[in-house]
Image (cartoon, rainbow, N blue to C red):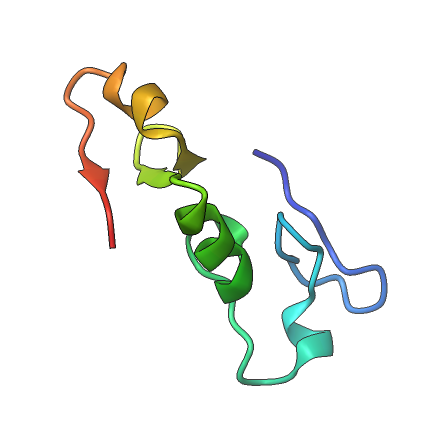
Length: 74
């Protein structure tokens, strides 16, 4: 997975919506996988789960294919 960066500040941005932590303000933070809180909520609502193997949100059936993979649902 690459990195999306803000053209103005050079900070890492959210993969889902390209929102920059510096542009959004000091209370805005990126979470796991470089997603903003709104995109994490949207991904979880669509049924995605965090995969340590892929270091990204994936469908549960994709995560289940990896042996020894732990699927975390929060």
